[in-house]
Amino acid sequence: MLLRTVLSGHTLAYEPAALVWHAHRRELRDLRRSLFHYGIGLSAVMVKCLARDAAGRRDLLRRLPRGIAYALLPRSGKNGHKRGGYPASLTLLELAGMALGPVYYAASARSARREGR
Image 1 (cartoon, rainbow, N blue to C red):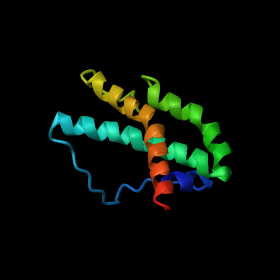
Image 2: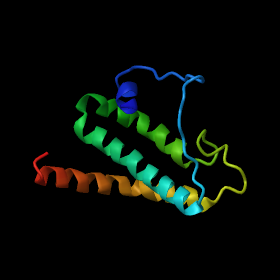
Image 3: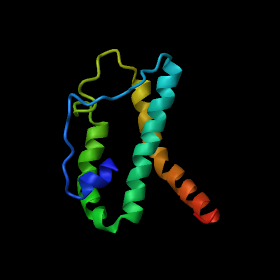
Image 4: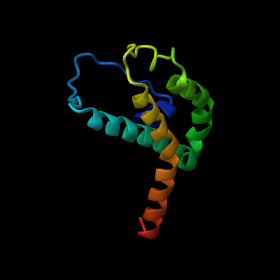
């Protein structure tokens, strides 16, 4: 929904007084799983938008190089704040999830078509 909002030309606003529940992972194993699945979900939703949203496709493709740079470059807003001891394996797991997202999306779409959804 957030991506559709942005691609429709609307602006998301930061509201510091908003309540958000966020569970921090107690175990490294759980954090690893979360980051991997986050990567899968992120790229799967991108593929879905590219495949199904003709109106937003051009805008998404225009923004894609900046998004890739944001995800990959060490000094980007996403990665520049990571402390020296941040495990590289966590970053690699998230990127691996991003690489697999299109595969997971395609499998899900195929399954939905078979089930008539």
